[in-house]
Length: 305
Length: 323
Picture (cartoon, chains in turn green, orange):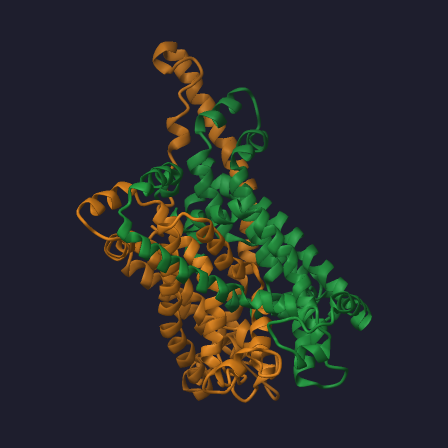
């Protein structure tokens, strides 16, 4: 287990300092590499540009005008009001459901993973190594293989087609436990915990007052990843839910897309789907831009530890 | 991966408050030992209480569904007799089922083509942003990573609109039908690449940042150009991270589900109900109520992914980051 990332800030500084001394023959290479980056950036941003432009068009404009440029009419606000009234305003319910599932699962899964990760790293209890080995052994079990049997079990428990059918399975995050165990093991000093115990603090108090503040960066990362994973989840809610009122955005938009493309009954509402997709990703993109540090922190933790 | 790591740390580092046992004499040592025993008893209880919620979830939503799927897959549901124990019949049926086999072959071929292409793009992008520290390279890093933050459903919807000759620019530019049965697999591959290349780029970039810069410095003094440094030094130095992202990509492609299911209404003739093993398992369960057969397919797929990823990890253990 290496802690490779820690040195990055320092090494970065040296490379920046060395840059002016680079021979000039690399200037051509610099231009070429920036050209490649520019082309690739256009590829990655193309769908977003299309979505932004398409969200300003009405349904006819979507089919009749230049796909990558504005049609002349500006219908974004009309589309938004259509979106909020389509099917009795069900989109707003989907939005609320996605937020509910993401927040409850994210906070719950992070709390549970924090307790377990801390216990695996810092507490000695019988069966600890066996349980942790089980976790590591099962971390590679593909989630999609479990969705169908989980649905059948949930049906037998009478919980299928309720919010719990989506929230409860999302609380399990073995990878989060693993990350938090690794992070806690490396960054929470035993001496600090021991000192708190000698001062008479109980184990829960040691955890909340001493360990948790130190674990904060990793906790934010796990929270962010679980929330986004739940917000983006499709297979689990698709299987668990049949009541349209309980759908998250992903499943809801897919039902609209299905009925629009197959065209069975009701008007084709592609412009509503487009603006619905835009509204669904705006919070994610804002969160992503604001919390960049934690995203990258989480990825490097996952990859290098 | 060593589960026993640090298991002895608490015992070693509890020498007592007064500067260690040697200074406090025999009585102090006995006191410390008693306290240690009390502490470890308390820790055992606390430890179990702390992991209890996780352990319950692990049983309820991982072990139990796994066991249930295994059990279901061994039974057959008939109208006359009800549930009948059928040994491995469902597995035999799956292995002989041409639709299932075509789906398996399809995801394997897809993985073999898509994985190197995407990892190649991710590696190129990582090397580029590692080699340049400019505003454009920082912007590029963001642009490449944004698709990862978008739900797969919405990423697929956007590409569906872009592929469609009615709403997208691509068909008029290239005269290719992106949704025909010959091309749709490539179109799906493009969606996956678009969505995940940036994620893999960031992982590889982070690994590159961890390589000490002095290594490049000495290569440069020896006369190596930036391309040579990138290919001969940087790429081998991060081989463990490359192995890791390759494993995750293969695991993902074997479970291919959301993208084909979303695009299916655009061309149901090309994207059939058995297009990938996961789509097949889903359709068997929810369109045909064949829960037992569906469980067998899911279990088979899960076992292949599980065993495959551990074999891969073990075979590349020396170079893998997951030690």
